[in-house]
Amino acid sequence: EPAKSDCLTYSLVNVSDLYNEYASVLNLFDICLLIIETCRHDQRETITYLWKNIICEEILPSVTNSESVVDFLNNLKHNTLFETSDVLIGEDPNGQCEKFDSGEWIARLKNRVSTLGKELYNTGTSFTFPLDFLVMELEGLRKQYDDVRDDIPSQPWPIQSFIEAEIPFSVLLESYDRLLSEYSASRLQGVDYSTQFRRLSNISYLLEAWAEAAYSYRGLDLSGGSSTNNPATELARAVNPGGLLTRISSYRSYLDGIGESAVDNAGNDLVSRLTKVEVEIRDFFR
Image (cartoon, rainbow, N blue to C red):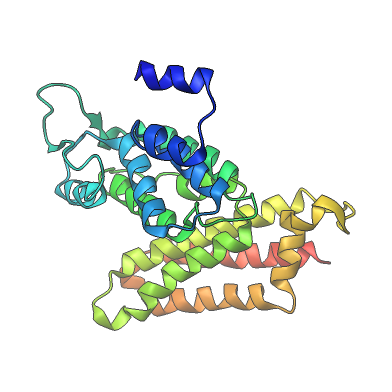
């Protein structure tokens, strides 16, 4: 709206008016989150609502060939400003919809999450970057996208976006571990074992990325200064007194418990990956 834009150009506006009369009215979801972070207002429902709108803004309206994708997106857009946006199956008669199955939306969403994450997470507060919620939703989107593909799974772009947002590896591992634990607690309730395997594969990728990042600091003086929060010192804290290595061993045991019928031959590959990253972590401290 030109009048509102002119007001911001030529006059100062208090933060309450900035949020309620400008950012919120103009659906500037990113700005709304930045204002909430600046004011230290821990409004969880509002924050989740804003993030859902951000995700929807990059994907909707959408067309797909999958009923499962339709169900997922309809659930995602519920109680957002995009609730009336089309989620079509098969054909898009007006040519106005994002083609979900093409995956072209992934790069935009990944960049938006990582860019906003950098601004929100490492500012002394993290509540405006609800990691567990974002892990669940972005990994859900990735699974839906992979399910409509016939070739190998896509790159783990949700994890990549979090790493680019400079979320500490140890924090990421805890979030992905919680997601895995939820499935573990539901094993007796008809849980989808292929989903558990997928979670373990994500954790393996995260550990591999952590080890690779830590090795880039090997040989440097890691005592004091800004280096205290780098991947190498993070890894040292996680390993001592053996906690991370024990956890990796438990992941392998957990994978054995899923059963070969659920994961086919990919299970052996994942066991090998977990073993390899454990060896790399041990070697890092020798």
